[in-house]
Length: 236
Image (cartoon, rainbow, N blue to C red; front, top):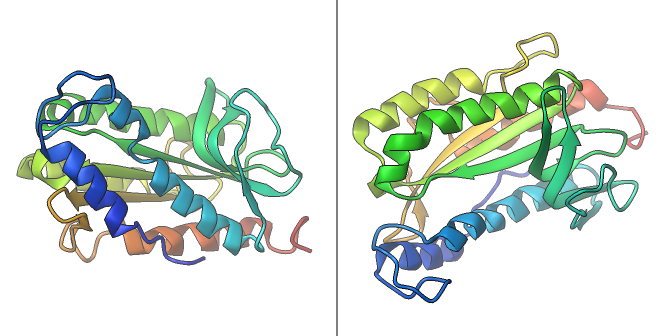
């Protein structure tokens, strides 16, 4: 599976919106160093598409399509869905940003973002709880499914202690190696800290030896899929 490349220009454009006091999407003025509500909802959609395209190529050059948000089956028999794909898990129904579900969920992916200093300080632990619950709701019904996440945060809004705590916590959470491992763990998980001034993904955080680095995302996900589904339909 190709390494996920996050377009620098996209991040730079979002960084311009995040940095300045500009007209928000609702016509009001928003604060600097933050997104407005609608921007927060839309921010990571381009990252979802990059993940979807890489998965589609890895799975044999299949189509990337938009799902119906309430449909329980994909619109085509063999496709990658980018958009709200609904999975009925063992705990609750959950919409994922990307899904491959030719016969039920085989791969599901969600991007998560908190977009200002106050929100990160107040809500990052709740976000971690959400990640664990999303993984568990899938794995309790579909233990062979691969659950993957990316957590995307603006670097200036992350305090040094929070960053260290996030790295330690997410490394533990993204450590599911086997179908018998605990359901709340994810098979692939990356932490992306980005610079709004330049649009660059920070090169030195997480640390070089961390499983959370972006270049390790595809390296973690692809072997799990091959191990669990190699030679099975539709890959015969």
